[in-house]
Length: 361
Image (cartoon, rainbow, N blue to C red; front, side, top):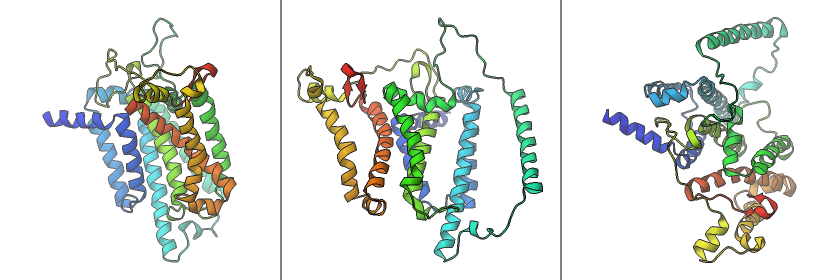
């Protein structure tokens, strides 16, 4: 019993957001450059290990209450689906990389001469999928009650009030950014960035076949944005965000009386009050000079530095226009975890806070 309590306390500690998110990022990049984990034996070890973790965790009443809620069951399934298809894609990529290193073509090119007819091959497959998915939905609807609640009552709001799962990442972003950023600017940049990918990345390698060795940076950045900055946010909002929007460990009781004292401060307060021991200047430009200087350096100077150092190869290959557009999109994406980590560790609310014109970053 003491061992179980100790292990649960360790998991609860590791699931603190300031530890969990960087830990997942390190685990992702470690796995990407691992050869064994993407083999058949690696998949047969990784996926059952995660399944065993969930199965054992269901014996904890607090974990079971959260994970078995009708709203959250699809999220548990989503974790396994994403894990399987990530392994499957990387497994094919590693096989192709080995073939290319041996002077052979990718596996996808070996069957290019074969044709598959819509009838009967494709139609039969679609019919089988239709029957299986329909049976699954029928069983699901019988075993799990629909997560319907009582009619809206302004005097009895749910605690916590959560958006649908596909908006939980956006709801989590609203904690750290102003609504105009989290609800308008960042989602718009995501859409524009996705539309711009074919024009920014014109490398023909990897078109029509799986590969990792030939597209390390591109695949790593994509998986960082998709898995860590979106799927992990959905996981946080589903399993770790509890009453009063506090963070709870997976084995921790969701106590509505839990209150975490927060003293969120801005960069201007850190500079003027804590470091210089002065009052905040009344003029916004003087008050926010440190935050504005950081943003100017981050979005204006850092891309130039990276073009001469770490990203020099990309600058030479892509040219200045495509490089700076892609680099700015990358830095804006990375601004989200930077801001989140600063909130978790330093209680930093805004880097730039100009309430006079409702402009906060």
